[in-house]
Length: 326
Image (tube, rainbow, N blue to C red):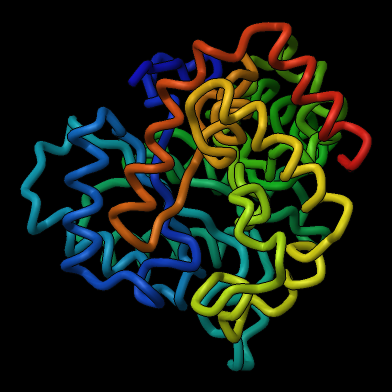
């Protein structure tokens, strides 16, 4: 496993990391989480991604309990969470959901720390942009979170380039803690934001990326080429919105073509797709997910594929995937 700086910060993150979206609590209990976290750490992974909203806060609980059982030195691992949607989805309080105002953020970090049983969280993200709160208010609140020692670095997730730059400029003018990283979706079929919209931010601001969905929610595993298999993510009750994309005929045909390249490199199409994301020099880490130990080992095997992606191989991959990418 190789390590990369998180943007221009001094923090070193493993090129592949492990996230908890969909899986923790829903498919992975504390015991399974402990085993997979230990296996990931054994393979060199040092970054573990989470969010307040995952499983209504229970994902943070599962991960926190697993950390406690593993008894790792706190310096050895990096953990994240994300704020925006809140937990009071059915409540009446407008300051507890879909917001990035100071009141919500100040209390949200305390909730995450309690659920995870930690004194601080390494990386905190604004999970989506909030059009109803001035960016300046959000920047001050996130910077204060770091000043108070409850977080070490802050960033954004799925923000526009214009909003990221506005946040950075506000922080720069006021000598506040600047946003260091962005967490966008990035895979062979979802590329425009990372490759075009953010292009100037890497050099101008030193933005680092912790990307999610390298397998396009499972499409790039190849298992959806003949429909939605039983037990897959597409069959989960709250994941029904993914089915149309997972069964896209054109993209599944492209996955079939990628399998021949994967075979030449002695890897799976999943490993090829993850390695392709990691091959982008602006990506600090690729967040992977797993509901089973075999899936975890499969995904982490992509680290051995990254050096095999020569310019010639990358060109062949792009020729297949680019015409279908957004």
